Amino acid sequence: LAVRYRIGRCILMPLFTDTVTVYSKITEAEWKRTVVEGVQWTDKAEKKNADGVLSVIQYASVTFPEGTYEEVELKIGDCIVCGIVTDEVNDIRGTRVGDLRKKYSNSGVVQAVKDNTRRTFLKSMKVVLE
Image (cartoon, rainbow, N blue to C red; front, top):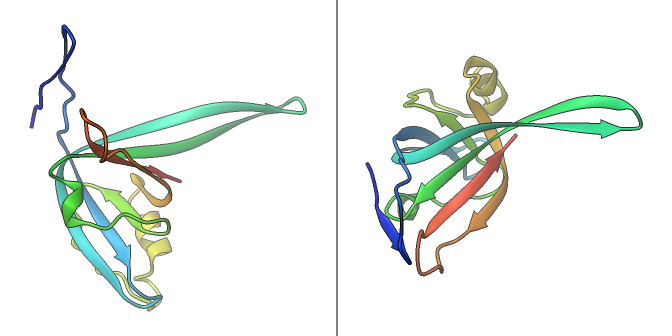
């Protein structure tokens, strides 16, 4: 899915070609699985130097453009996996969110949600995963 936006004389053409599976936490034992197509998954790494010790923090962000975020409620604590995943998550050993994250390396738990849906252009929701 390619979306074109014109701002002034510039044309922006972000490509939202990724698919993710969102696991929304309902209760400790119940999770709702939703597959969302047309998003952008970005892996990131930041170097931190604290008291002479260099560490690398790896995280991912997922951008949900207009037309994709309406079908899911994104909140802190939810789990997102890159790709289409059919695994069920519940409170039984071997099927918990931690087990899902071990099975799929491109996954994370939502740490922050940025709501850009009130903008005039490029309406989106962006989540940061750790």
